[in-house]
Image (cartoon, rainbow, N blue to C red; front, side):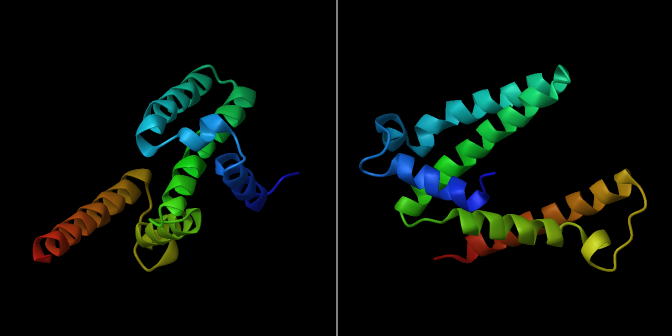
Length: 133
């Protein structure tokens, strides 16, 4: 069975100088439609309760994340490791009822906490943007 590290290497190889011409020419902009199409196919698989197809389509969505991250890495913007790190930090931060002392006994309470933290993060991000010269 292949690993996540294998996937990173495969995507890098596809984008390499001697890789796939189609993959090499992709940009953030050109991949937008691909990501939207793959997300729609995930929705269809869920609606159809087709778990085999859902597994495949989730892989296709992951490929879009990997390609965008590889492009960003090539441009020295960020790496897939930074995407994962940021996501892990967000999940821990937005689940204080799991990773901290907050309490949430229902899905509604969990969602309320999530939205409160998200709003706070947005406000703090806005303050940082305003402070930049």
